[in-house]
Structure formats: C-alpha cells, structure tokens
Image (cartoon, rainbow, N blue to C red; front, side):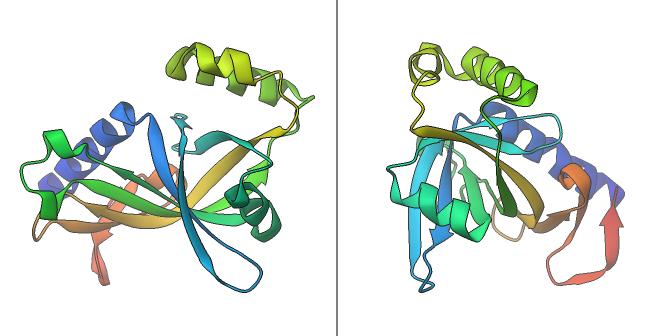
Length: 169
C-alpha cells in the first residue's frame, strides 16, 4: 500500500511541476457557480498563486467568499485516454496578498520567473490582485480506478477516496 501511495505522490508532484495554468471554480452570493482559468504558480507548500484582474467576475467572487476550487489537469495531447486524464482538484482558502508587502514582491518575482514576461507587464497594473489559494484537501485522479484523497499541509498525505484508515505521509 505504501508503494502505491508513494507513486501517487510522485505523480502528483510531476503534475504540479508541469502546470502553468489552472481551472478555478468560484460561487457568487447566490451560490451560482462559475468556472474560469488563470495562469498559476505553485510554491513548495503547494499553495496556488494567481494574479487576476479585479474586473474579472471570478476575482470578486473569490475575494467575497474567501474560497475557491482549483483544478490542474493533464494536457489532452499527453493523455493516454481522454476519459481518464490525470488531474488534481483541491478545495482552497483564498487570501489577497497585500501589494505593498515583501511577500507580494517575492511571490511576483517567482511568478515572473515561472510564467514569463507577461507577468512583468501586468504587475504594475493596480487593478490586478495576487491571490494565494491554500489547499485543505482534494482528489487526485491518475487513471481508471486510481483516485486518491490528498490532504494535510502541502497535500503531503494520500489516502483512498472514501477514507478508511489507509493513508501515507
């Protein structure tokens, strides 16, 4: 069992290393869902960072609710089967990183390094917000019959969907 969980953690790490954008899900004040996407940078604690326009509908929804769901998914061209694309979907707590903080500057520099010069062009725009999405738990799907619950700090723990006592740190 431990070997299976170790493999799942390794594959999740590869998925997160490759990701450059993520699908975001948010809800409005009437619980109406919205899906969108944004370029993303994932830090070592597996927190997702997006720099999004305050004019975008998802930005106001995420800021108001303080939560979002994030999905990273294997590229279609790399998938063995479109019905079983590797993906990670996580529930996150959302916070705005203060533009004047050292944290903001450091995070934006790392995003620029990972995502390219467009970040350089956008970071001076004050109608954009840097949002940090900290995952609480999620689901990792690595193919047919290979779905896992991921949880704990930095999503470092893996268990079977549906719980049970089986898990690996």
